[in-house]
Figure (cartoon, rainbow, N blue to C red):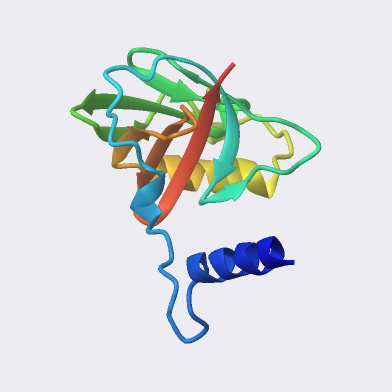
Length: 152
């Protein structure tokens, strides 16, 4: 009986008081502070804007030394980028998206895309920095948006 009372007292001492506010983790708490020197690789999109990508399909993102992209690239889901000390500068790659058609007008592909594909494009457009998370993911973030990527 005394052991049970002692255990209850110890647990109560560790819990915050009811009127004591608990600190919310800051968004930066998920940042390891590790700035990757390179982000080249093949990735699975795990989250967009802090929310997990919970769909019945996956989105694969490819990053080379100069480009970031995912399918369907013909809709403009392709960027060129530069990375230095964790800062990233991203621009839409003009080689993708609607193209001038011979004789006028434009030509584009017509696949249907999900809202997640569009949200991913918005988040990549806004990216200003790259960090590694404690779970060893690469995170692109900026302008209130983020993309969480795991290596494939």
